[in-house]
Length: 305
Length: 210
Image (cartoon, rainbow over all chains, first blue to last red; front, side):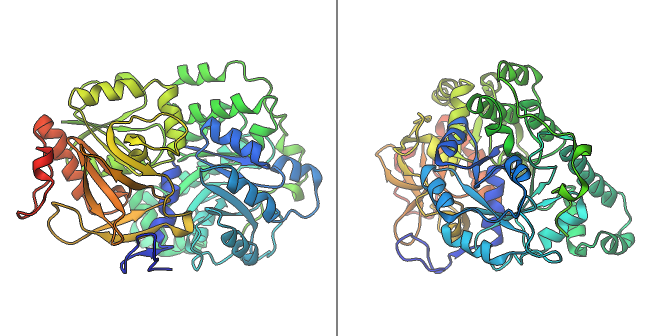
């Protein structure tokens, strides 16, 4: 909406550019984004050092337990969380539900997560994210999925993991798979890239960019199953730019110290002595789920196309 | 010359990339002992509440202040600007409070109001600097010891300098324009004799900081 009277922007000023959308994710790097369902939880997360919060009605573990259709949260819940903290606030819309995204933009959230944790609204297509001023983060399990989402306008990625399980195994699988896809590109002669683009179902130009950068063209966090400081540091050592932690904080025995410890472990992810120190006496982590015990149709990571 | 980049949280890698491309020897700083023998320290963009807590937790505040008094140059971008300010009333932890400026956090609005704009910078030759403002703070006042380096058309101050301390509320590390990084390397190299970049003959700032 340039020019904006009163906020100092000039004729040259532009809002909603790719640079400011991708740039906010760059500011979140090396940080922890925590799921919260109340203003009080948001304050605990901010106090612990979270670099952003994800405003929700229910954390993924409860969504999983409750079943039924999971939708965008009540705007009232989101607005109260926005009012409670000064750090960025994210919120989730359903895959392929642009109107939920429009509502979240109107509420003033800082990032929209088009998320497989909610029940998809469209089983073929995702939201066209480019026309929005607010940036989007999307989940991925592999390079092709990541580059399709970026092609649609996502300014940040997160590997999916399996949300609400407290089990890190899927998060590890997904981030390793993304890196494997990137390394493959880097060792591929250029004439093979178009066929690889066809194989991956991803835009050719983004393959070229990823190959030359040696990483995804946008910030990539890890998500889905982080429960301990060591889990968070593991994702950082595997090359994540930062960590989302959902049920892992507020489904644990003592959320505040655990939240703080996870933040410290992400900053000092290469320092085992510090990770050991911050991991002491945190009480019980959330109770985890064995992935193989979850019925196939209840796996969230499979949602997204 | 050795430049540290505070790596508690934020876009420290982006700063390191630009500095390395300019030939600087860089290192990541997470603990007090990593401040030794630095000529300059960059405090990157990030979340100021997060970085302020980590500065306290890892007991970095006093060591950074001490190194600054010994002549280490410091440049804060965005969150870094908030942490350098003497007056940051809406930061709920004590920052470094090294620069005679006041700041207001998230002063331009939420993320949908984040913007890019051209700014003229005192002493920079060439075209205006394309500045990226992300949930940016604003410099609300500049005291006698500091000097404004750049303003938006409505007068909002967006960059300032005080001797070897530099602050920008926008993110030069997100652009291909390395003039601020070059300027900071010059500050770090010049030590106590550093001065503002000279522009023609009209900068009223040169005399104040020489």
